[in-house]
Image 1 (tube, rainbow, N blue to C red):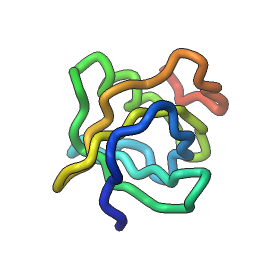
Image 2: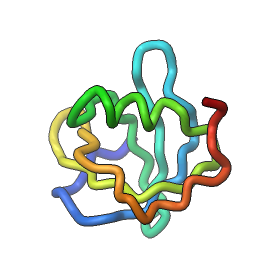
Image 3: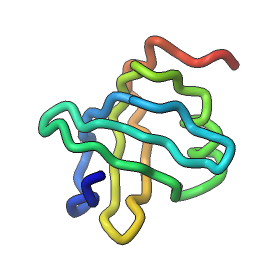
Length: 86
């Protein structure tokens, strides 16, 4: 797995593995093909929102670098199809 680069605004990612029971979500960046395992989120509401995404969902995220990549934002203009069952 790749390590996250510095924070950026609105990179597009595809969910490759839905969030598991441990809270780990796997996404692939559309522009580079880099894959990230994300298990840290800016807050619980963001984590719960991302938990609903199914594999194949495309989202725009802000991802902060570090030992474990952290999702800091889910951008509102994000297309959320296919959407996980709520």
